[in-house]
Image (cartoon, rainbow, N blue to C red; front, top):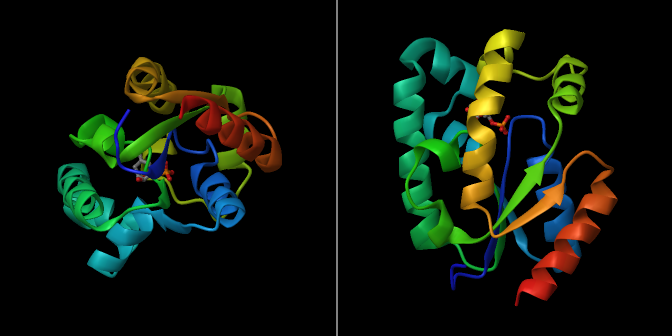
Length: 169
Ligand code: S3P
């Protein structure tokens, strides 16, 4: 486990990382930071626009840059990461205690496709999305210090994280 005191949420798209991180940060009186928000601010355009005009390779380079910035800048924060950041960028474990929000594909699907405002370029095709999900699960497990059940309500996920983080120290 990293000696850095950030709490870092990882997991597949739709696992509720941003919502849970926001609620957790409030409970812990910490700042909440989201890597996708940082990249959108850096680029002054949305993630979908970046994928469309520059392609995925460019986006992954921006994620690595974002991780490098967070490593230098953040302490005692709750960080939500884009689903691919821990997979493609090196060094997420150095950022803090890594918490994997593990959700079933069926639950993720419902959350993402049930939300008309959701813009996720890698979730447009179900077969591709499931393939990505299967490829990534082991990696998320291997990178995390703590795994929690991401299928439930936000409040219960937050409770599980708080309990497990306290036990891990
Ligand atoms: C991605 C996840 C997205 C966003 C981008 C790529 C991925 O973030 O970074 O669309 O590769 O899993 P969320 O996990 O917050 O949806």
